Length: 179
Image (cartoon, rainbow, N blue to C red; front, side, top):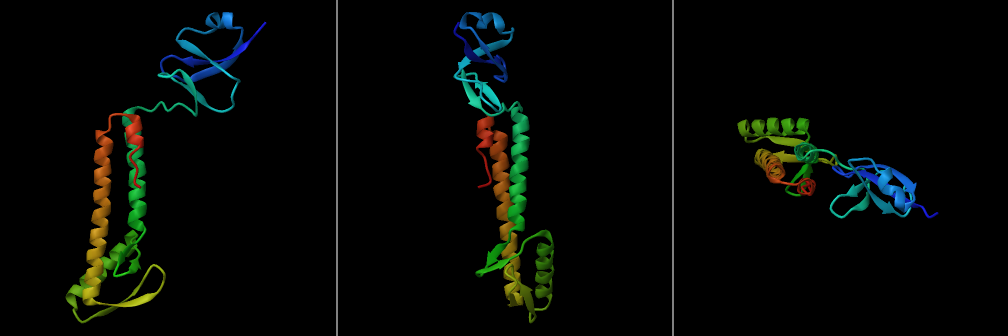
């Protein structure tokens, strides 16, 4: 008696329901309706599914999310990366400035002060904790650099959101990343 190991899978989704060992002549009678089978070398550990196009066993759990859900999830990843970028700092004149929400407010306040008092010198602590003295004009330029950094970062997010919305497959959506 020769037995073979089979993956029994859902014909609609490809999700492997179980693995079984059977004599080849009995596998059709052992497979429930709505299921198919493929021969495998052994009973593997972990999560598996069958690629319905190639009828091959694929490692990893089957992603049963809809295209719309994948789009929502990918957009959430993009937003998280955008927010991390926004909080990650920016450069002006070879100096690295903090750009978290509090730092942005402090820069905006200093820019407003510099606009009102053109002779002011503002001590500013950079990301590496060095302190520099910025003239009113310098501070205004820091504000411009911050504004450009924020707008460029948001524009990238808007572009990626458009690509996600226009994607017509799960694979295309998942290929859209912040990097």
